[in-house]
Length: 463
Image (tube, rainbow, N blue to C red; front, side):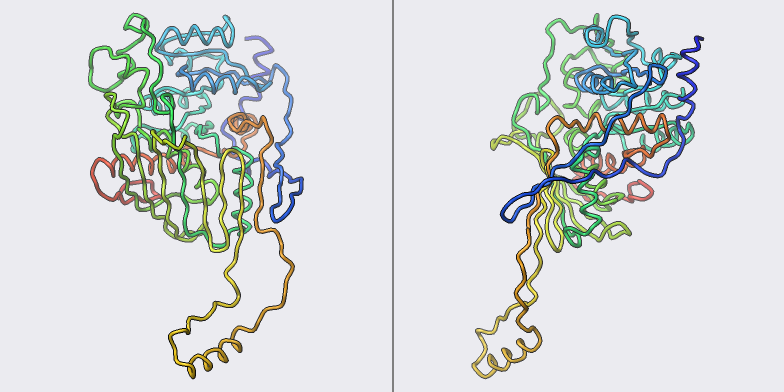
């Protein structure tokens, strides 16, 4: 082994060390006008690293999402993509086009995690392979960036967390919006009590496109000759080659997790990150196949209702989630938290904070009383609630903006790299990832069974 590699490996021995805090909160600049204040959020500064300190990464699952992750991960000057694995040959060809002919490619993920020159892996396969590859990689001493949802079945999450803890190796779940500047600011605002006491939250991700409805392109030449179909099936029923099930896996329960696993998990992640919640204790979902009747066995519209118990982090509140794949209004998304003194809406890298308070005087409803009682009550009211003094009118609405070009996925990888190098606390470790994914997957159970799912967010188990 070269001295270069020895030097690089020496710093990687820090993998798995503990830390106390995530990156610091951004500072604020800028002013608005009228009754709205405009505030621009600022990203943190970058650190440069030498070639000896480079984290070398293998991409496992080189579909569109995997390639996006790898391209972002490789933008960091302290990281490099050195290997790629996929079951479809054309995706491996594309990886060589993107990352260079020198990278190692294979259909067998085990050949990636066995390599000495691989320090970390990105797991971006179909959902049903997440658990096995993540566990094997952690046992092999590789740090893991696992795409959401963390697992395909709820029980799989516990085994992944055990592997994470036993190995002492960083495992981060790739729901990258929690690393956005708007999320960081939302956490700060929530902790400051900017909306008062939380009582309700709602969030949605609606879509209006073929790609948004998982109608991904299928190459006419796709066949068992260039796709390892048997490996793809894993422990599911052995069926003849079906290109739709390979390229559009999200449409099928055997390989994907439907709307909740693809989209609700993002919304749970953001809400839990802001509030410090461990999750709901009651889950109910409804939905159906309303438009995209293309052979899929999962709904194309889903609605969920959730009850969150009071904890040290937050009061009891209710949550509603929605996703509609045929939203004729054009689609869109937001996360909204409502409290006793305002609301906070996160959408498109922007936060709108609207604050309001109940008036000091509650008002009177005495019109149906006789004159004597009306006069009696007015006297009582004016003594109990004297007219308040005039006050300056302060801004009631604040808009926080993320700068153009900011990439939350890039920030998410920086958190991952900091954990590898310095033991920095991960924003989404295995436990966080399961507490976001499990309630999402429980939506599928509720929809299938037509009943409320009772969930223990602390032990992470269905009751």
